[in-house]
Amino acid sequence: MTISLFSGQGSQYTGMGREVAESDSSLMKILETGSDILGRDLKAICFDSPLEELSRTISAQPAIMAVSLMCLGSAVSKGYTYDGVAGHSLGEYAAMQASGMISLEDAFRLIKARSEAMDEAARSQKGAMAAIMKIAPEKVAEVCDSAKEYAAAVNYNSPMQTVVAGTPEGIAEVSAVFSEMGARVVALNVAGAFHSKLMQNAAEKFYETAKTITFKSPDVKYYSNVTGGELTDFSDMAELLAKHIVSPVRFTSELAAMRDAGADKFVEFGPGKTLTGLVKKTLSGVKATNAENLTTIEGAVAL
Image 1 (cartoon, rainbow, N blue to C red):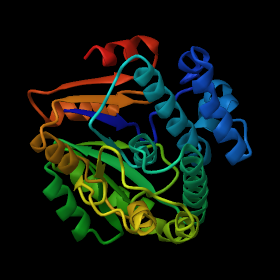
Image 2: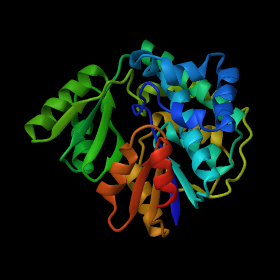
Image 3: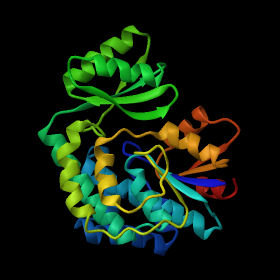
Image 4: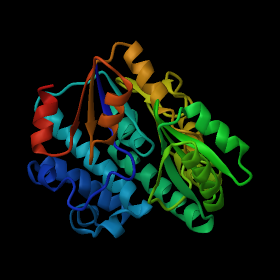
């Protein structure tokens, strides 16, 4: 059983996707569709923007989604098939489109609304995030719950890596505690406290667009960050996606659910190989690789 995974925010780099897009005019149309809906030149954002501009939420989210879908399209054209999909945070939108749940146009409409709402919320409410390593997720959550300032465990990435988000004061407070406990603490270069209650305004604003979108039942298995398992109820995706903005990413639980369902091959589409690394750290006896350029896409097809 093969699972297609889709990269999240933070994996972006200047020039990503250029080789893939230029190899097939049908893939370049993904960027053109995105540009039409965004009202911005998505090709220029991906290929030519300096990293500082590309890393802005309103640029990174549509750009990463577009590159992820181009890489998948390239692999499919070479014979790649898959049985299920999952994404990490932003990656869920590429996963929805790849599953047949939404059209390409609606994927860009959703990501435009999401990125703009999250960017606005981050600018109006200062937030911070940090990755905590070498401490069990349950202990990370316990420390956050005990903090005087606001901090929460928001990304359960692997058995020994959990991301926390909160106010700058809250993240400073818990980071000091984690350091004293012997953890490795890495501050993340992000604009806000994503997947925490500080994004509530973004969730409410995004919902107004999400409820206008038509969602279909997917053609393959679809795994959800919110539930941490396979999603089978698609009756109110707008509500679920709004909740997703303020809820933890339960990626470790998703991987366990995929393994239990028989998944033994994982291919990460899009820039970077963060999810590939998380699979290898979390599951044993499975194959995992990334697909972000023509060489790695060929390798993924042959996996």
